Length: 544
Image 1 (cartoon, one colour):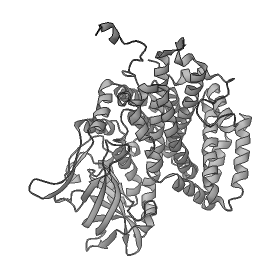
Image 2 (cartoon, helix red, strand yellow):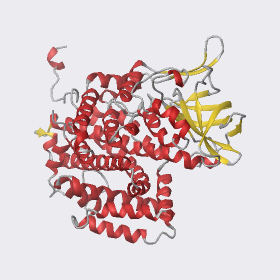
Image 3 (cartoon, one colour):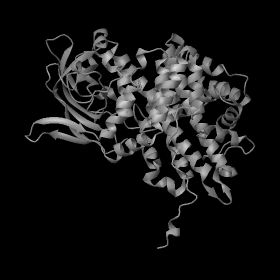
Image 4 (tube, one colour):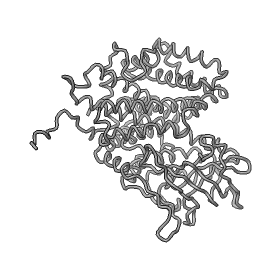
């Protein structure tokens, strides 16, 4: 065969060797907006270092290898002893080591920690999303443990360590630990009050034994887990270590690993407890209230993780279209493709901007910001995670057949994209959570309205959307059936308010015209043609 037939032309080069952080203008601006100026030099340097690593060929190879070689469960050793160990490819450990070393579990121990950590989580998730699960749960366990000051004093330094110390050993012997969570059971799912796992107190103060199961236990090789079980006074939160202080293995039987659509590099298992030692966290009967702080933090990570997937998908789509030629010119210059790319870029920037605003509220910690988070987190979790899958699918289509093959990395993004909408409560759970807050916590609604009202008068379409939302919220009778409708509207109004205040005029104008003004179709690529779409696409491009 003639060698000339193998000449490769008109193919985009790999998107590699770039700084994932500094090439993301929306993210850089959000960090600069929300961080104390005194913290910015160090934060920029740290995030740029992480960004260069995330965009390197080495990190991309780690991500591919971790997914091509998923975890393997070993229930017994060669002699028949129960070991319940999950083996991971070395690439998984390298990814996890970089995450921990970059402080992605250390937000609670440094100034501006949540904004810095959210930006880092958004950057590093673009290298590989699956290993973010134990990172997220370790980060989120801190506020739950603070319900018991003695436990927090013992465990928090280990959780916030920047040393990744793999292997099952007593926690006291490790330089850093990871946490998992076990809430859902076969018969209940999101209805955790239907849990049947039983907790029996021991003579030691605060110690119990557990008997029962968990239908989903993520990252079963973690050092400890927060779980829910029924004690005498009701549903209670417990800390379950994998290895006891004396070096013996706790009763923690991993029955099987889930065969999942995506998130394949991460192990999710079904776990049985039978005489499992546990330490109570918080008061008996207050399990949901104790663990809810962990749930809220992981829900925010669902928003950040989805924003990361969206950003990587958009970066890949714009990159491909910038190099690929068709019908006499570059794809990125074709009006219809430019409309699609701009629409995707708007969705991505809105998600990133909202995610960093929520992280900043965590750093502030004031009463008003806490009230704001009570509504904003579930509303954002509902909407941003739901927008992830259609965005990634459209971005994949921008690459055509090239995007449909595994080597492009786009199928992995697509398989991962539905996860965050399901994890930590599906769409209906989030909508009902917003509804409960609206009915029971007037301070939360006041804080939310104050936030969106900060942009009033800047855009007539935003003003009209706020007015319509107030009308919708004025009558919550029979609201459950329409909860998704007004939660979606709340999220869009919040995103619109943030973009009007902080984004370039071209971005804010396009968002308000389409998402709030109704000048938009049912698919991506249906923005009004009169908008400055080229500027929106250029802002989303990776400029090296």
